Structure formats: structure tokens, C-alpha cells
Amino acid sequence: MNLQIISIFFWQSLLLISSLFGITAAVLGKEIPNRDIPSLNQIKRPSSSAQMLVQSPLTPQIEVIPITGVKVNSTDKGLEVILETNSKSDRLQVTPKTEGNSYIADIPNAQLRLTNGNTFRQQKPVAGINEVTVININVNTIRVTVTGEVGLPTVELFDSPEGLVIGATSTTSTTQQPTPSQQQKPPSESNQAPIELEVTASPDTDYNSTDAAIGTRTNTPLRDIPQTINVVPQQVIKDQRALTIGEALRNVGVVGGGTFAQSDRLILRGFGTANILTDGLRNYFAGVRDLTSIGNVERIEVLRGPASVLYGQGDLSGTINLVTKQPLIDPFYAASFSVGNYDTYQGTLDLSGPLTTDKSVLYRLNGSYLSSDGFVDFYSQQRSQIAGALAWNIDTNTKLTFYTSYADFSRSAYYQGIPTKGTLFFNPLGKLPRTRFLGEPDKENQDTSDTRLSYRLEHRFNDNWSLQNAFQAIFTKYSNDLKTRPIGLLEDNRTLRRDVFTNPEGVNYYVYDLDTHLAGRFKTGSIEHQVVFGTEYAWNQFYAVQNRYDFASIDIFNPVYGNTTLGRLLSSNGSGLKVDNLGVYA
Image (spheres, rainbow, N blue to C red):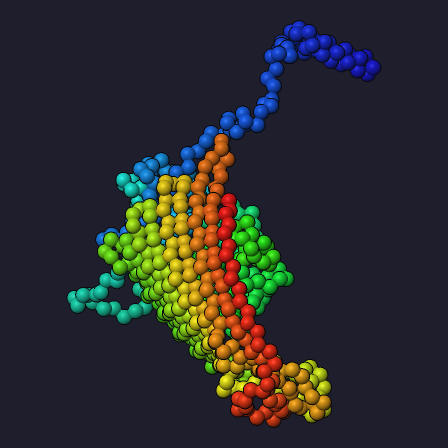
């Protein structure tokens, strides 16, 4: 045993010495090859320059073809989806697949770059086709989905001077009627066809938004924005039956601004905010005196935290951007009517479509009306709004859009609360109902009217650079007859002292906002950048005179209304504000 171990150790030592000195030996019937040891100057050293890594990537570069436009045209067989590629459609790599009634085409070397966002969606473009969508699913891949109503559409692909064309034909089913000559046989278990039950449901609830404009002033995918942004799309607003901004944002952590609230004073991240934008333009007095109408709002974007880099002065809590409904290229007509508690009635109207045969001029018209009472005695409110948008596609690279809206918000019996004695705390005279109104029902009427005029000019120089200029003017007028305020309960536990405020000339607000910015994309090596340079000028002012008078007391358990006599003048204050803002951002 010892001799065997010594023998094995001897042969292993001999093999090691042979390999070190390049000796070829045949041991145990196996030949050990000769290995040359390289010298130091022959060893390939690793790269010491980051620039060489950028300029010489490990994997070959893939040409990403931009999709600058999407068109849907009806044909005698169905429709055509045209992906505009500037004569590069033959380089697109299409990977098709099917899911249920949907034909899906993934293109891994393309990127959607549209002027009005990076998502294209059109519902019911032709009979038999339920929806057509084109979206970015990652940085260099787009997905085209054509969904049939009752079955999978037939699709063929071909190139054209405009780009890649996806032709879709809807599946139609016909039932052959029996001829009189055919002999009718009574049904039996042997000749009856099996019953097929088909259930169709929409796979897309439109609850997820992929893009937002509030974080960069351009429509950018949310995954590319290093900020906390929440987007509430149109489908969520509809399904929640939201009537105010506060109700629409209750699922994203924003508190306040309910149906019976006095104004859009919202709480975000623990701070109050009235920093509300409309299509990226500021309204310095939004929600200060009334509730903002959202009948013409397509989606709501919430940027959490300070946004002074892009929007100048603002709140610590965040910024809210209302994106209005845009004109559609195909005719669209919708109306709704809803009924709710507290005698709430609401009706809406939404119309859109082309005004010219070449579809270069488009329009959109929205109208809404709301009438509602509240849980407080004598309280009622009425809100109405009409908004319009007119878009003119001057050419393939230039677009001019005009916006206008008028909203009126009126209410009676402005609620100022009730004493804590008899509600939260004990009152020896009894309990006070929470519906009790302790003002003057016939005189506490408030009305707010809001007029907005704006335009937006967009021009695209090429696939990478574009210029946008926008202007907005808002005129708001607020008026009220009088507004009572409770001061305190007397020792008899039933007499409430009051004073009253009046605005003899009303309050007028004026807001003007002008913004111009240049957006572009460029590359340094394999790294792609998106930049924005802009300037903004805003001018706003208001002026108001408020008088405070002594007013008659009221019995909280047996109120008697109708007192309109003002007491002695306690104070008269005039207040105003005029602000000019000029800023640049990058």
C-alpha cells in the first residue's frame, strides 16, 4: 500500500515538472500537450478608458426607427393602420401574435414619437373593429393592437411611401336562411347543433397612463421621469362619477374639494395647495373662491413635491395639472345624465370631429350642468360649463389650437357651521340637528363666473426638435349679497351672536400666462438625452373691498329668518394684489 502511494505521488510530480518546462510526456497512455507561457507584453490588458466602452459597445447597435405619426383610414374591406416612418418601413422587424380577438404586432426596433403624446388609441374606427392602439412597451419596442368586436380580424402587412401599412378586415358572421324547398325536420338530440356561448369583455380598462406632461413640460413616459407623478385618466373619472377635482384625486392621496366643499383647497403631502395648472399654464387664483369644473378634463396629473424648477414659485405640497379634452379626427358624440342623493342632477354633452373633408380642421365641444342640494337646510348649488377647442393642422409639422371655456358656479345658504354646545358638547336645552342653518337663506347668495381664452402653437422642425408657444387669459368675477358669521353663544345657551361681511363691488381676478419652450433629443455615444429650454411670463391681479357689520342674533333652537338690516360698520378693508413673473427654465 505504501509503495502504491509513493508511486502515485512520483508520477504526479513528474507530470507537474513536465508541464512547467514544456516537456511532452506520455504517461499512462495519455499525451500531455506542450503549453507555451506568454510573456508580459503579450498579455491583452483590460480597457482603461470609459470612452472606448461607449464607442465600442459589446453588442451591435440596433437601428431604432422613429414612428412620427399614426393614421387610421377606412377601406372597403375594413381599415388601414399606417405607421409613418419616413420611407424606412422596410427596416421594421415585425413579430406578430394573437390573443383572443386581438391581433398584436410587436416591433422591437421602433419608437413612437408623436406630437400629442406617446400613445395612440382609437375606439370603434370602423364596423367590426373595437379598438386600435399603438404604444411604447419599452424604450425601443412598440406594440400595435387591433381588436375585433366578435372575432379575430384578418391582417396583412405591406409597405407604402408613407410607412408600414397594417390592413385589417373584420370577421363577419352570416346565417344562411333555409329555402322553401328544404324539408324541415323536427329537432332531436341527434341533429341539434351544440350551443356555443361567447362572452366578450374589454381587456383594457384604460386605468393606466404611460405618459405625463407635468414633470418635463413634454409628453414623456412616466418610467423616464425621476419624480413622483400620479395620473388619473378619463376612465377613472367616469367610473368614480367625480364632480370635483378633490373627488377625482381621492385615490392618489389628495384630500379635500368634495361635492359640497366651498373651494378646491386641496391637501397634498400634509400641505395645502391651490397650485392648479390647465394644460401646463398657471391659474394663480384657481380654486380660491370656487370649485373648478372638470367637465372638459381628459386626465389629471399630480406632481408631488416642489416643482419650482419648471413652474417658478409654488407650494411644497405639489402641483396639479388639468389636461383638457382635445379635438378628435373621427366623429364622436356622447351624452350622459345622472341622478344622485340630495336631489343631485347632472347632464353632460361631448361632441367632436372634423370640420373639413381633409380633416385638417377639428373641433371639440363640451357642456355640463349640475344642480344639487345638500344636507344643510336651504343649501343649493348650480354649476354649468361650456368649453370648446378648435385645432388647425396647418401642415404635417405645424398645429394651432384655440381653447375657450365659460363656467358659472352659484350657491345659496353659505354654510358657516353650528355651535359645539348641543352638537359635540352637552347643552341643557337639548341637541342641535347638524342640518341647522344659522344664516339668512334668502340673502346669502354667491356667484362665480370664470372665462378662459387660450391658444397653443406647435411646430416640429424634425423628428428630434420641436417648438411650442402657449398663451392663456382667465377672467374671474366673484360676487355675493352678504355672508353671516357666528361669533359666539350667549350664556342662555340658545342665542347666537353674528356679524356679516359684504363685498359691495365684488371681486375681480385677472390672470395672463405666456410660455414658450424648445424641446429636443440628441445622443452622446450610446446615451440618449431629452432637453427642454423655455421662458415664461405671467401677470395677475385682483382687488376687493370687504365691509364688516354688526348683525342681529338668532335663536339656534327656534331660528327666525328674514333679517336684512345691517348694524353698525365694524371695519372696511380694501385688499389687492398685482404680480409680474418672468422666468427661464432648462
